[in-house]
Image 1 (cartoon, helix red, strand yellow):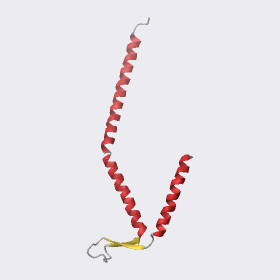
Image 2 (image 1 turned 90 degrees about the vertical axis):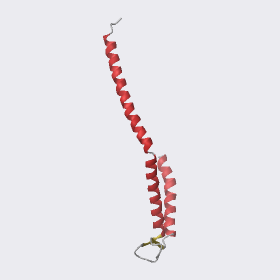
Image 3 (image 1 turned 180 degrees about the vertical axis):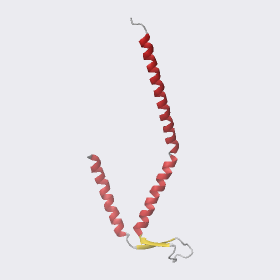
Length: 110
């Protein structure tokens, strides 16, 4: 319930801000990819300004997440290695426990 309230308190104002932002920046702009002839229509894209801003925002988020994923690769590799080692040690402890129980069962009772 608290998570829903927090999401409502954060996401609702954020959605309203984004809607206002889109309405305020709906004029059409041209993004030219030819620096020598900006009026060349072959290498130009026209769209509302907020579309280019959203594309920049989304691409920045994707590039940042990929960079973070690659930078944390050594930590994921270490976690996998330690998990395999923990499983190996648990197996060895289980074998020793079984062996100790067998030996305890063979000892004469008092």
